[in-house]
Image 1 (tube, rainbow, N blue to C red):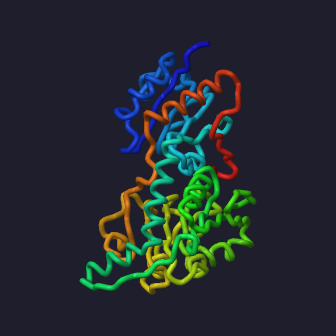
Image 2: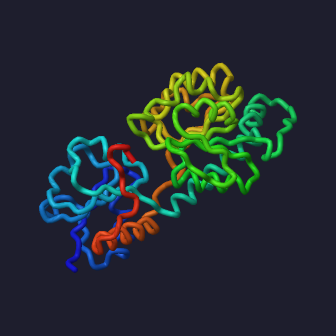
Image 3: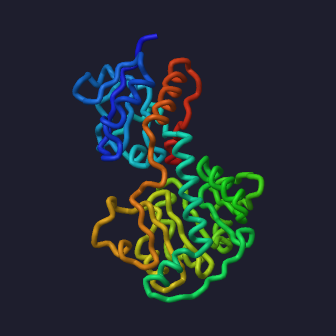
Length: 314
């Protein structure tokens, strides 16, 4: 078969041609890779590999067979009105990213369970007070979003002995997990989630859903861990719940504006942990293998991995 002509397009400082060129060339030795958009006519390009392209950047490509995102989240792609509508769009599914997310959740969930945030505040106040914590089997962790990442996280939390509950748009059956589905069961799910891990995609339906009413349904002293997208959160509502002490702590890896502005209250809030959107970074060496597998499937007519349903936004 003829080699694919592939263009790499990224405005993200995390996903640069310098990081991706060697792994992609090793994984796709028979294909033609272009890391400068003007190095090839858009009419001759078969595949675009992309992360955070500028709006309209993909419109000139008239004969695409695939748009392959280098990220799990595709909200900037599906909301771009100029994106070619008849071209398959696939998100990244990389086992190393899943492992990284599982490790990140394990660290933050255990920190929340052991109340290391409270101990850090006590240290800043030079206050000596022993804290008694329950065992993990008496602590409930809720996972908001039970896709592939949510399932992997749930399995890990079960091995640590936590009681685990999960919420999803549609019913999911996962052994050992107390499952909730649909809007009508969301309040019940939240009421029992002492530690809430957010792994939902950002869609028009989920944007801003973590608002004052949502937060009020969590137990007093709950901990919020948002590793999904900043656009899910109403920042003022979250700050209000933290200021009042209703929420004990929030771990935030993602924000409505990134990088997080220096003047934002999250940076200095005693009840907030800020990390710079690094819970599950794409690893070019392992992700390139996923790209190669999807291109193999594209050639043979097999179903592509990570296909996005544009009507749902993920």
